[in-house]
Amino acid sequence: MVQRFVDRVALVTGAASGIGKAIALNLAQEGADVVAADKNAAGVQATCRDIEKMGRKALPYEVDVAQFAQLGKLVQAAIDRFGKIHVLMNVAGISPKETFLTCTEALWDRTHDINLKSYMFLSQAVAPHMIKQKDGRIVSIASSAGEVVYPNLGPYYHTSKAGVIQLTRYMAQELAPHGIRVNAIGPGLIETPMTEETRRNEAVMTPLRARVPMKRWGKPEEIARVALFLASDDASYVTGETLFVDGGLLTLV
Image (tube, rainbow, N blue to C red; front, side, top):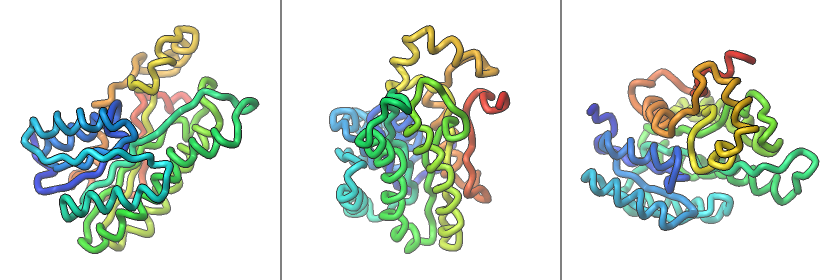
């Protein structure tokens, strides 16, 4: 296996399961030491055990990314343990199912705090360390819902993910002179714990699958491979982009 992240340190949020766990494990497989952060403490402990079995170092860290004060502490813990952060993967996210008519202010705020605000302020906390070393890669998980509307997802999810796309463009411009690249991934329909309820609902799943030219759901590992590409030197001239990994869904828009 190609080892693109030897002597690199990566911080991954949402690392207890799904896309975040897949990214963390793939980074370790390619040589990175990993800070695995998530609200699910048992989940990140399990992720870190798997990383250590590969011979890499891992730091499990329990964090609620919606709590701004915890983000700086997370970054400091990573620096205290490893000295540097070369890669930041903003993955943590939620997707409640309330509609426009039933969405509450609290739900709107919680979704944006996790899906967008945490990406902004965790990136802001990491950036000075990347600027100091004149090297850094930030990859955030947006969504195809930032471009199209899924009737089974609420408006707060769509707007938060659209915000990630625009935030990525902005950060890319400001951080490029410092040797930092910033990109995003827009997954389509992916088999994760977050989508399990939808996948059990055939009335919802059938029309969703019909919108995908490849006629299947994607796997977390398929997102992870793209995330590693964007964080690697293979993407050395790529910044400010959102790469949609959706089985061709957006070709039908």
